Image (cartoon, rainbow, N blue to C red; front, side):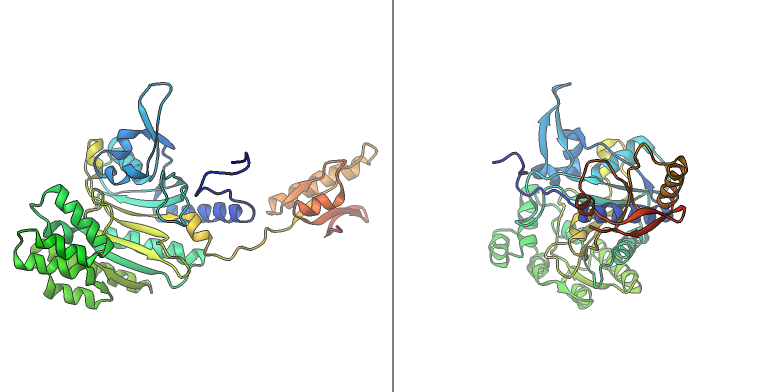
Length: 394
């Protein structure tokens, strides 16, 4: 190890990627603001229990844990910001009606999500509290698509699922058996799934439904097939109806929509509609979302909740990076420079910066080529009684 290396699955962001990340963060937060989503900024570190209690147990294995030297209590670096936003809604804001919140910031994972994933995603998201209807799910999913399109990501595909189908089919199961089944379905491990179900005493329709779920992926035909393959129970019928409504809303946005009823995640987290956004060139989802009613119960008040989060760094890797705009070098004037030149230079530099130009103040004693290396492509020169911007001579 050398002092200039960073831990595995962490990375420095350099120009112009860092500039693109910050620009995209501002652009998206501004877009969320005009849709009524209010910005909140939770702390990077919280007490461990606040991040892993209840629904947060899904995050426990990804959580960096340390002991707070001030209190001796276990604290953690947030692996996800959604539990923090749920705490803010439930305990700090305590509003009775619909609340729309947004956020942006880094999170840290003790283990990478996959072999290529970074352990420090930059997470930006939006959450909607207080409305249990599918209209809220449609709003956040469509808003996600608009953000990705505005950033330049085309041909995004949303894969949708519904946790209520799994919950209905495993009603009455022990938690251990339900978690085992959950893992097998996520992995689409059909052989082990068949062996596991062979050891369970189940109604024939439930067994058949669970064996079909790993095959339940594709287009709208999946929902039509689900009507035949899944038990005709009220909660499953409601899930189909919600997925149909979501698909129609997304189609109206011009999105490609798919279904994968075994693409489950967040065993302790999600309660209803779930969706994942995939973009060409990315093996993993660039954004995840869905309903997580009740997460606020751990903080004193359960509320209907739905939302999404985007990994900014994953998105930026898929976008073409434009070079940074060339800066203008403002010369360092000697002590004998006329007062008129000095005053005019200050005014000209202020006007250029107000117009959005990058102006770099020259510091004496450095070779001219070093300013070109610093990004200067133009310079200010005094000609005909005024300061003019001309190409920079390396």
